[in-house]
Length: 254
Length: 156
Image (cartoon, rainbow over all chains, first blue to last red):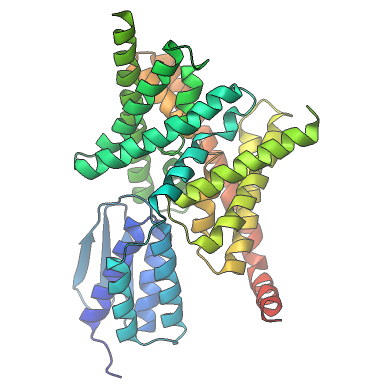
């Protein structure tokens, strides 16, 4: 087996780091995976990841490889696939060429649950345990439906627009519209409870908690970027909901 | 309603939430059940502790410790990065609704409520993050022993 060149190793580490980062791995894992792979391939690399970019550099060489990343929806399946692959490589079970081929395959592969499964998922996430004995059962049932609608709206907006933060805003808008309409029509008791519950799939709570975990883990820059991003997403959702319920209330007045 | 039924409802809904979020974030199928179980158990701890105290710190901290310990254990059993279990389990605990409400208050010009909400959001998020740190501090020294134990039993 031909020994991989330093350039190839750095390039592959960059690709691996980018896949991990895009699909929702935390920065510490991105960095350590890239460094393990480099070490196992015989090149000492250091990797630095923030939420927006991965840098990979060989210790012996001034060259640095920079991959810009735009984080999107989580796809943790890909994180798992890369993890399994890199573990096998580090353990010496597969060679460098197989690893390269595997990474390219994972990059291109669309791994996903089916849409009906995801819709059902969004629906049950929309029934928040937080509200179990605070909201009425009828409202929680509506939250299931509205949660699905909001999730679909966010996914649809995200697919048709590249404007940042417009997707969660669109989801919030639809949720605000539907929940307020349900209350005005007398079908639901509390629009607020439905909104809070149905927003669960969209709100950036996990991002915020992960950002604090990163800050505690001394990945300060990445953590701060993530926190600001979470606040922006929450702002977009809040704005969307306010506009949505405002529209319906205006209609109701007429 | 008898207390057992209340708990059962909490468990089932929290389980469904966790699994549902796992589906949205595309976790591998083999982690769905362990994550659901961990998330539901952590939610029960949260409910139990928050009925005893008014502060949001203790319930979130303890629930995060439960998630941290169980998720790390399951991560060894199903051989997956622990983050794949953390993310779905957190969905019911995380202050997502709170951060939304404070941003909504900002939009509506209710600045005082917004600031209070943001501070509370931060408090909860810090409590959760510190809970994970504590859980990992407890778990890491045990990891080699547990890994060996799990692997031996997996082979038999």
